[in-house]
Structure formats: structure tokens, C-alpha cells
Amino acid sequence: MRLVMKFGGTAVDSPDKVKHVARLIKTYKKDNEIVCIISAVSGMTDGLLAVADGVRRGDRSSIEDFLKKTYKIHAEIAQNAISDNSLREKALSEVKRIVEELHDILGGIVLLGEVTAKSLDYLMSFGERLSAPIVSYALQDAGLDAEHMTGKEAGILTDSNFGEARPLMDTTKLRVNHKIEPLLRRGAIPVITGFIGADQHGNTTTIGRGGSDYTATIVAASIEADEVWLWGDADGLITADPKIVENARVLKEVSFAEAMEMALFGAKYMHPRALEPVMDTGIPVRIRNAFNVKHPGTVVTQNPSKDSQKIVKSINAMRHTALIDVSGGGMVGIPGTAAKIFDTLAKNKVNIMMISQSPSESSISMVVRKSDLDRATTTLELNLLGKVIKQVNVSDDVAVIAVVGSGMRGIKGVAAKVFGAVARCGINVIMIAQGSSELNLAFVVKDSDCEQAVRALHDEFGLGSNGR
Image (cartoon, rainbow, N blue to C red; front, side, top):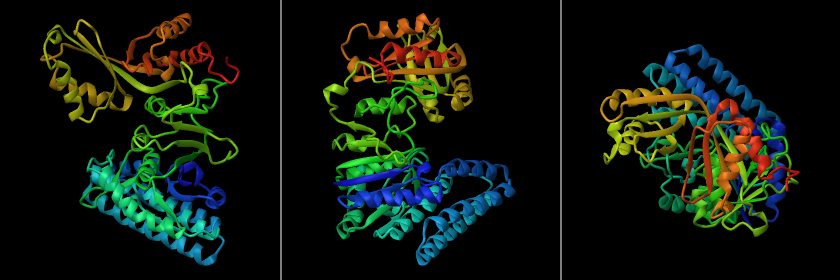
């Protein structure tokens, strides 16, 4: 088989884990062609974001501390994960070179006194650029032919929407295939940084937090891989957050559509857009635990088997959200009102996660991330209050609960069952949204009611390990 294997940050954040990853790849390399996608060491991306904030404040001391810590972490992993002296020296030399480049970049940004979206993408690329060479040399240390490269060098071409760049798939497929095929024919393992691409001007771009999954599926679609394996620290997609529901269990199989809904509604194990490149080609995606190799994980596929099709597959909760309700009699019967509201928010980079409108057309409710709330309300008040809308009401402590399952289509009484279970707990539902696909039913409750609602629904649909 031709496999694309992505390893998350928790799988490469210590020397022992890197050695374990190298042994794991060696085991599967015997019978398969393998391409590796590597994430940044866990905590590195958050550290880079924090240092960017330090740059904005002109805090030079935090930069020096971060650079020392970054070099120390990666040098220790390289030092102890690679036994061959020559390979170890090459890895350490590469780490030193990249940290020096990071030092220069940070110095330049401090002098400018600002962090643009373009410079932030360049900055954010350093996490993966540091981890990929270490894994590559560890594979060579294990006796395998490996070659590391950035996503940019591998041929991933994106638009110039820094921070959330989208791949230009037709060109990317040609370029990635041209770069990777000769290496696979040679029997080598390409080790590619996740998360990173480049626009048509050669500027480094990133494809969003958790983008290593996305890189894996982009590469898989480009080289016509048989499967994508996303290795992390979880056994697979689960019926609910195990921190909330004790008897939550791993799902054996889900459809692409279900997995995408689960990712959008808070399942942390996959980038929401990661399935787009493989949906057309039908390449299965397997989510597995790098530290529990015996567990088969969850398979995401075009057509799940009948025995895995239940009415409801999972109960997902999305926290740290806020509800904005805009209202006014002037909205009724006026074409383009919703368009003006959404366009105003979009121009100010506010992503709307969920929408509901009353049939009277006198109010529209929107769910946004809590971090976007101030910007959203300020934008609406400055641009539309007193013109298009008369009132803006905010609930800043809500949670979205999504009931996901393709088996809900055409089944009568699912909504009654959902809201009956919630009502029996004495929980008030603030807002409801369901698409015509009937793939998910989402509703908003107070954040303090979230966990109780998730547990009640999990029990109602018998999703637990001891469920029906």
C-alpha cells in the first residue's frame, strides 16, 4: 500500500517518542510506500503565538528566553533520539541553523514593531521546520532512506490568505507528485512539514491550526495514496468527550460527512477542512493512537458498512462561544438585510459558526467564538446599529451541542427525543439550527448546562461502551 502517515505534536515531543515513531515507520515500511507528515513539537505553536504577542509589546527579554528554550528542547530531542554521531551532528546543525534564522526574523519584526499576517505565517512555520529534520535523521538512524522538506519545498501551492490559506489543488497535485514520486520509486521516505505551504510569490503560508492533517490529505490526493493514517494520542473519533462522559467509546467507522461535522463541532482530532482533498477520490482516513498501536482506530470512509450506521454517532460540545442576537422591525421584508450583516462581519474577519433566523424576519441569532465577540459587537454597532438593526443583545457564556449522525435522515422523532432528554434535565435551549441534510442537529445552551446535556443525550441514544 501507499500510505501517508501524519504524526501529531504529542508523538514527537521527546527523544523516546521520536525513536518510537522511527520504529513504527520501519515496521510498516517493510510492505508499504510511506510518506511522513510531521507536526511541530507540542506547545511550540502556542509558544510562537506568545512570542508574537511579545514582539507587539516590544518585549525583547521574552524573545531571548523563547529562543534558548526552543533550541534546548529540540537539541535534546535530536541528541538523545539519534545514536549515530554523524547523523546526530547533522540534525543538531540543522536545528542550530533554523533557530538562528528564527532569531534573525524575530529581530527584524521587533525593529518594525508590528506583526503582519504575512510575517506571522513565516514565524509560525518554524515549529514544523524544526521537528521534521529530527524525525528524518532518526529514520536514517534506524537504517531507512529518508529526506526532509517543507510543505513549500514539497510543492504545496496556496492562495495568499495568510493564516488560513487554501491549497490550489490542481497545481499542487502536479507539483507534489513531481517531487514525491521519484523519492518513493527510490524507496525513500519523504518527511514533510505539516501546516506549511507557499503562495505563487513564494511567500510562506500556513493552512490553519491543526493543519498537518490537511497537509496529509493534500499530499495523499496528489500521489493517489491508498490510505491516510493520522497518528496522535487518541484511539480515534469518540462518541463524546471522555472528560464529560465516562463511558464514551471509540467509533469504528464514520462517513466523510459525519467526520467533517464532528471536526467542525469541536472534535479535536482532525482539521475541519482536512477531508476535502480526499472526499472526491474516496481515499480512506484512519485516525490512530501512536502509543496504542494494537487499537485499529477509526476509519473515515465514503461508504461505511451497514453495521456501523446508527441514528446518532456522537454528541459534540463546542465551548468558549458567544451568542449575538440582532433585531429590529426595519429588518422585516427588506431584501439583503442578512447579507449586509454577514458581509460587515466578514470584512472584519469574524467567522460565524451557526445562524438561526425567526420566521418574522425581525431577528437573527449568530454564534461566534468568544475571542471574536468584542470585534463582532463593535463592528455591528459602528456600522449597522440605528440603520439596519435596532438592537444588539449578547450572551457571552454559551455552548453549542451538536448531535451528529447520518442515520438521522428521514427518521421521525429524532428532534423530539433530543429535546425531550434535555428538557427532563431542566435545561433551557436558547437557539436551534438544523440543515436540510439532517446530518446534525445543533442547539445552544448555557455553558453551565453543557456537560449535563451531553451526558443526557449520550445515554438517551445508547452511545456508551455499555450502551444498547
